[in-house]
Image 1 (cartoon, rainbow, N blue to C red):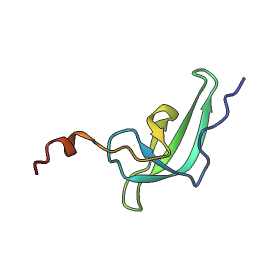
Image 2 (cartoon, rainbow, N blue to C red):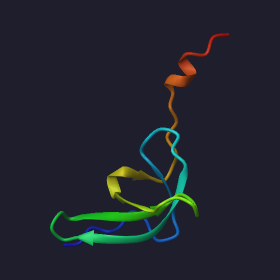
Image 3 (cartoon, rainbow, N blue to C red):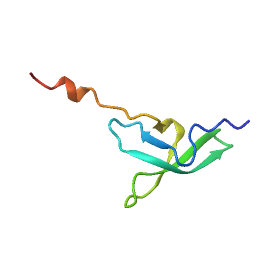
Length: 73
């Protein structure tokens, strides 16, 4: 049975790394062997679009909280 996709073409997504730039899903494919979705994401007109597994992407940006811990008043 095919799992429902998490993202659609045209959706804005972020990589799971903290403070990653936003990208746009431009293609998607499903693997019957691994039962997982992969999404092709572009981060701009002058960068190569890359394929990511669904677990590598999220709808909201992640921020690095450790940068705020080093700030002294």
